[in-house]
Image (cartoon, rainbow, N blue to C red; front, side, top):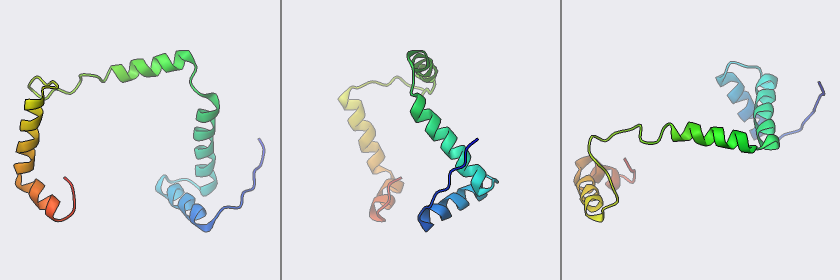
Length: 101
């Protein structure tokens, strides 16, 4: 194992301390885990086998959620959905206060 000494801006150091505390780790442990997780991910990239496996995991989720009615891209039903959403009182309150729901 090698040692790396870094000088970082105060804001970066404080962010690292905060994240370490959030996850119950020392700052050094958290930074090491962060570097390992991100450095290895970007340096290894995805070979074709990993890419295929990742695509397959993603496909397992396709169609899992059912709205209880058929959906499509017919513009009339989209317009009707949008109109009914805009008519909701909570939407009007959110828009008048500058927030979206």
